[in-house]
Length: 160
Image (cartoon, rainbow, N blue to C red):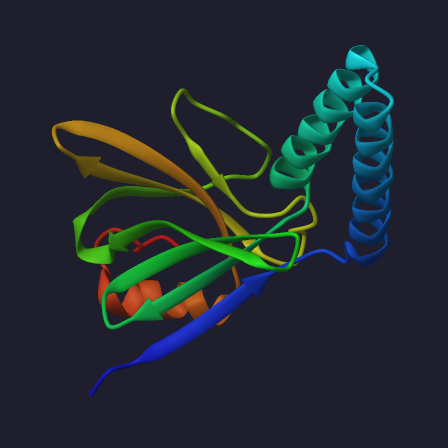
C-alpha cells in the first residue's frame, strides 16, 4: 500500500506579486514607447530592470512542497504561485546524515528548500550521497512528516 503525505511551505506574497506584475507591465510599456521613439537607452534600461524583477521574484517569492510517497521525498519549488519546478527526488533510505538545525547554517552547495517563515516546523539538514559527492538540503518539516521519516529510515532519524 502506497503511503502518501504532502506538506506545503508558503508565505503570503499576494500583495508583493501584484506589485511586481504592475512594475513589469509599466517597464514593458516604457520599453515599447522608447522603442517606437527610437531611444536606445530608454529600451535597454527598462529591459534590465525587468530582468532584475524576474530574478527577484524567482529568489524571494518562492514556496516549497514536499511530497512523500513510500520512501521517496520529492521537493518542488513554486515561484510566484504559478511556476512549479522539481528540485530533487530523495530516497530516504539513502540519506547518510540528518541533523536538526537550530539557526541558519549554510555549507557550500547546500540547497535551501524552505521559506523564511518556518518557525512552526522542525528544521533539518539532510545529507545525501550523489555520484561520490555529498549534497546537503535544508528543509522544514512538520511533526507528521518527521514521524514518517522515522518510520522509513529509523537509524538515520533515531534522535528526533
